[in-house]
Image 1 (spheres, helix red, strand yellow):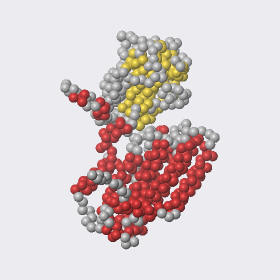
Image 2: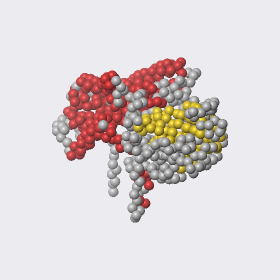
Image 3: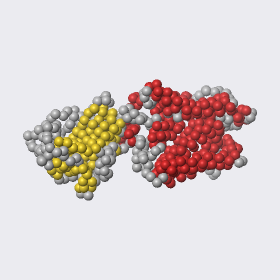
Image 4: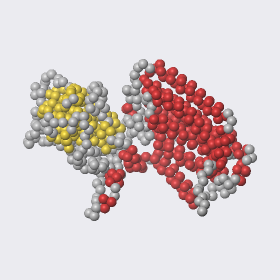
Length: 608
């Protein structure tokens, strides 16, 4: 018995086109020309960047001179390669169909059993082979920047993925105009006109809108610009706050500006531009290719089967969803919040949280006497060594009454969506003379305060106090404060770590924070000594779908048949930690350098 096995064969038109394009010296001369251009350009960038940064550290953050040179060369080569792709890709396909008509070979092509999709995909694949030569020629050049540092493998992958995507987009654009006009000159002109509008026209519109509004325009105006999309892809994941754009290399502010990043910190952080660009260009590519497939057909154009109508309806729906995402982002706030929750991780936004660097890095310290108290000014908090770790020490004796010591850090962290914000503190209280926190509950030996601005631009302050000495006749909370929870009593001479869950779990949408402005460590009273080993303001952007709604398990326990990750997905729980929302305040033993892993769910510091 003979068994027939399925055979796989390449697109015959693709094989024919590749043989025609790759035979002869043209392909080799083209590749040599690209290599010469990239080599000279990279050498020029290196010569320009070396005198400025060699032998010294960069003025931007902690980036070394070698990393800055590498990033400069890498970004320059990436943008030059993208420019070559934008200039060459449309011309490679603009004559694909019109050339067949002008050579009188289109009828012979239609006489073959090849369908429109096979014909267009063959023409497109052959044209993209030249673009592949450009990208292959650019790989060793851009990889040289990796030697200097400052460039990661993920940067290389993102850059070449974006260039390959735009090569497909502009090649399909040329293919569409070739099938539409049936004249190579018109197809080339129309293709370059649209490419020029995407590059220069979007920048012009962006500037005009900015001048007319007197403010920075939204970044989606640049969604069709390939260079803005490339800059956004390179900068995404590095820039999380407009206030940190100068903490990287010298090319970071340039990329941030080209990508439409906000320099106005009073306005919410925007969705990365490359996400808009990917959605719009994906839809545009599919749409143009589908129309071109109909234009290639000699008869019965735009007569679709049911499946085709379904595909077109889905494309229209995708366009509608994309328009709503651009012009009415509030419609997608729950989806964006869920997306942020699962694509980001919790992080501490405090700079120098463990005081491993000098206090000038992030912190502002000060001290003064209480009101209506005379005497010399007390010493401000200072760095000290405790159990082999650097700590921030707050110390006063009974001879200096009502002294106020503080260590403050400006956060200026913008929140685009409803997010989970937590406070944490690792401390050791060695002395505490005044019982509890005084008669009014405002003289705690240690208090952590979080200043924030809500969605109505109103400023608020959240605080949590800690004390050691107890007196039953004094309140354990601030009686004159409306936004402070009960204070926490801690053991003396023991390292303890405080943890909270979401500070803004049960507030309305208008009361959610727009920005986290400042965190302050505040010590007041007489006779205290506190060592602080770590300060945590933890932010996890976004929220899960059913955040704040604990699951209800029926008595017959059907839950055991459902995997745990289903509940983690919709309720935001973390396996082994319990749900994020319920619990109470906890103080657990901790070493000043051991991260806290809660053993039970803590209670949030609730806003009354």
